[in-house]
Length: 161
Image (tube, rainbow, N blue to C red; front, side):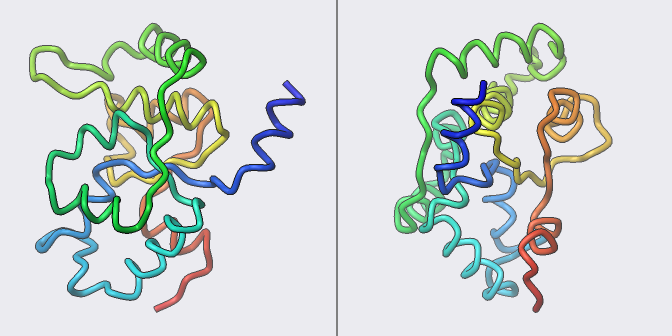
């Protein structure tokens, strides 16, 4: 375990971003880019510096070509799924099967996001409801992973507008 902690400390990664936060820059959303230009420039700087990353399942979940292009333009690091992450996903789903609703076709990206955060000791950035037992913040907390939203990210980073 000490070797993993040492490895994690060597990485620039600090946060892993969810699709909900990426989509929050869209017109009509809470953090619309057209209004929050400075905010998104700071987020983009963090992405290019590899402080904010995402995982392959979240990247695949983003079907919007404009958002995928935005991630590509900012050279977003997309962490691949490996055996450790798959094992973490199995643990998460065994303890929290409500994370996936097969009837509604809900993506399994959330479990992979949390599992990747567990592996790399990352803070999750998500706009999902903190009170719902089926959402990332609640399940991440149960797995001892921090989950914040973009407003919390601003506080965490000391950004003021």
